[in-house]
Length: 114
Length: 115
Image 1: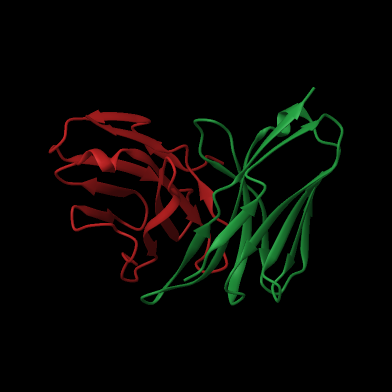
Image 2: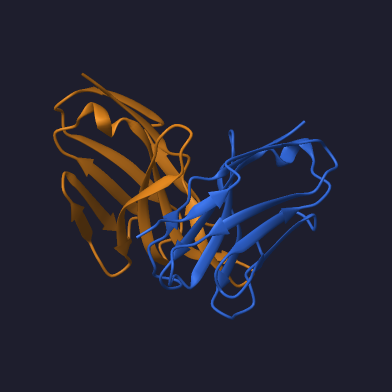
């Protein structure tokens, strides 16, 4: 079946603008994750959704970052008032179950803030 | 705080060689460990997942081992091919503080297989 998809694949925005990044997880996967990959920083966890439970937001770097998951499927990561340091590749992953599930990643969205 | 280290950072081998990539982690109280490969400009492809109760997993030419007590995992690639050239990432799922149990990634080993 289809894997995890993300859109857009590339996004260039001006500093101070808001952006929305979308993730479509694998059908039936209850867990969804957002990560950020920056040059020199490696991969960092941002937020985790598991079913109807409250999301784990412990990785969000500031209150400019937020995410929602509607209907237990599609998720949107929103970055408000973007800064140049937000430039990175934003990766989404999903898994069939929570803690022990194998995570499958999407191709990512490359965000460039000018 | 969990830290994951991968050594070497880069590795270049001739085609056909067997090779080992190393991953170490500081907190042995993990749920599982996952190996990924990442091709330039692409997302991550899951290679192997080892649960904390397991010692190894195999898929084709790949074999991953886990020694929880010593905080180590190895990824063995047999008969390497140019198509294996990629960055290999190790990640462990464990308690990461503030009630969170998430993947912590190493910085990866960049593998080049020379034809």
